[in-house]
Amino acid sequence: MRINKFIAQSGLCSRRKADEYVLNGNVKVNGLVMREPGYDVAGDDRVEVNGRQVLADEKPVYYLLNKPVGYITTMNDEQGRPSVSDLLGDIEERVFPVGRLDGNTSGALILTNDGHIAYRISHPSKLVYKTYRAMVKGVVSREKEARLRKGVDIGGYITRPAKVNVLEQRPGSAVVEISITEGRYHQVKKMFKAVGCPVQTLERISVGEIRLGRLKTGTFRKLTAKELEWLKSL
Ligand code: URA
Figure 1 (cartoon, helix red, strand yellow):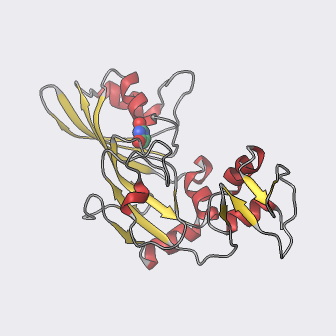
Figure 2 (figure 1 turned 180 degrees about the vertical axis):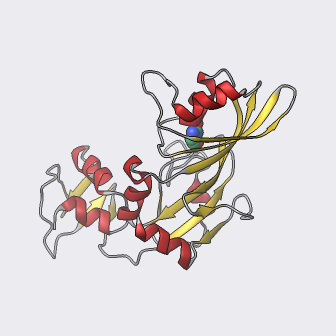
């Protein structure tokens, strides 16, 4: 089995990420650095990624975490900052976050050891809407709403069509729900900035059919059978 597939099937990360690990020299086979993405793992090979042995075929698991503000979306931060792994106490499997939320963004974050699902949720071609509730500065006029829906320039890139719903317009701020199918770096913040309404707080309330609901901040739950069915249909 190709080494990227072996690593992805172990649940550590996606195949693409596994290739990156290989090319960056983070992978060892039988104690020696292996930089060959096409390497075929033999049955008795010992594979290590970042010093940890990788065992193929862990049972797949799927969780939804309500990420609090102040936690970064990584499983181990080299600088020792609070990260989502600190919130996953008794999960034994080596899960990883699907996509990322900024440190100051809260809300729905899926964690799994299933590299295939991770790819499907994240790929724009799958048209999985990720919905955010944003508190923004200023007035989100009809005209701005229409621009956000159609696509705005966020620094050389025009965003894909979005769903936008202004829930509340207050004197100097608004609460807006926005659903996007992409996940570019700081995308929602850049979109609102592009229409002159900078984001003050941002929470992701759903990823496709998986909704945060009443899940308490800082806690996680297993995905339900229905949610899993939806995920697997992607
Ligand atoms: N868009 C952002 O700007 N930040 C996030 O965390 C997610 C989407």
